[in-house]
Length: 275
Image (cartoon, rainbow, N blue to C red; front, side, top):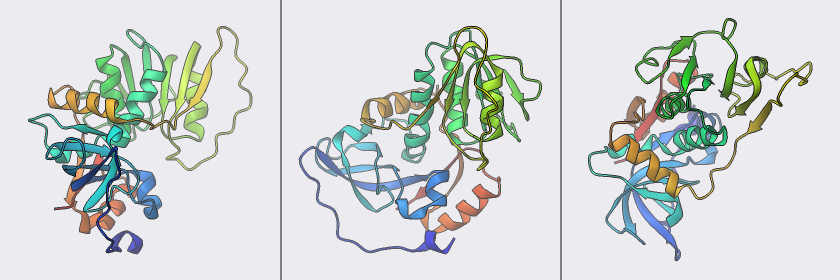
């Protein structure tokens, strides 16, 4: 993990009109960013130094977030309510936007069966909670399901072998899990393909099925995140959504955090303290 320990000294960025300069206090690391560390991160929380909302505590989403000072479009930040720790807010952007927007794309889930694969990770834990808040019957799949029932899962399973048909699948693992999630869809159901943590190919024999059409959708829309970030931090501030921070430490320890994540030792999100 040597690449993750390299620091670069750069000039403090200057915000353009419609942008904010943020003094970053905490950042959050996602699986893909740790696999490809030159991406520069996306999740941050801190204090606005320049631009709209100067002096306010904010959570932000945007490329290049892993810095002591970072510039974001004003439309990509949201004020953090009093009572919510900035470190917890930093855990929400990418994972929270993914969970919120894919669940929203699945349509109303009140009274419906919603499957979440890879539910022990950051996105999965947030998806379980949001689906529960929306009134779904939540089936959480994870090799280790610690704490998932407390977050709102009605069923916790380690495999998909004996799962009954579902109306919606939020699928984070890819490969054979995506294939199995498709097979589990009831007529008219839909699968939201969110991630590829398994690293394995998905081999479909056929997508044909009798009855109302089933569908598979991809996710990749993180545009204009500000309003949805506001939703997430509001839910967290009211105690309705746990950011599920599973590891926290100095950003000097990012390599240690990455090794723990890839070894399957972390449940939830990684948060790194910048200052």
